Length: 306
Image 1: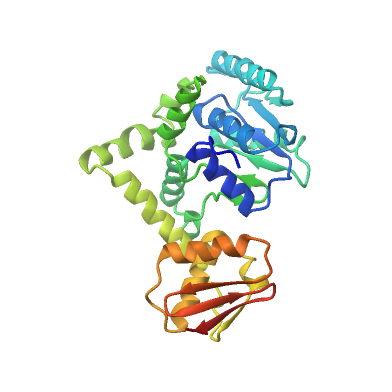
Image 2: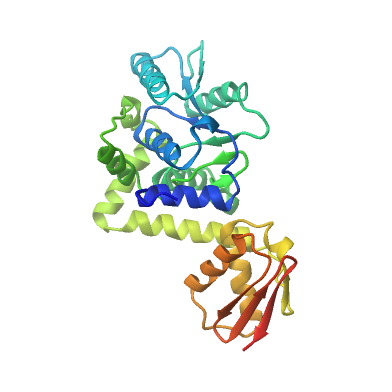
């Protein structure tokens, strides 16, 4: 691992390694905005270039067509400069709303996507918060909070814990440019209204509220995902069962299991260290968690009182 990688690159590499994506081909969706331009630059640091390709979709005719032409040329130039295959699609009809745009993009992307390919997008923390709020406003219920995740095949969204300004700062540090879509300032669109008006006013009224709201909704989503976990009552946890879950479900499973064994004085850092060790390929290891010794082999995780 290269020591000069920034923290953002380490973050993305960790997700790739944890989910065994290092040898998978990745189609990177690049709109020309800061988030997707940051994504392709990060992936070029942590993934083999020959495994990457860029996909861009031109949303066709309409009042924003001039910018769409500019974005198409801009992303095409990025692919050429970085010597990455450029995949593209274009709508021949006017797309009336965000739903039609998304459907057209995905239909075009499906023409290039193979079953084993990973599709990477630059969605960040604010995108996730807005999506969850929109779903709640539509009355989709608690399940709507699940929204996007960092990895759910074939979708790879490594920036969901990142703030959009951090991605721009990263690009500035590289001297890289990006485009600002003028349609993003149109507050007749609900998502834009939430971002530029409602969330902005909430943040002005109570600084830090947006981060707190995002964290609260994430906690609720994680608790929903973990509600169906079958926690063993004995001192053995099958490793094969543990590995079927996402990272936060694994963390919740381990925490609940320790509680059933009367263990309370453990930290999140200890749980995460156990997760890191379980991701490694060695057949056996021993860790101390509170008053317990944790013995791990290829088949099971075993708790032993110290």
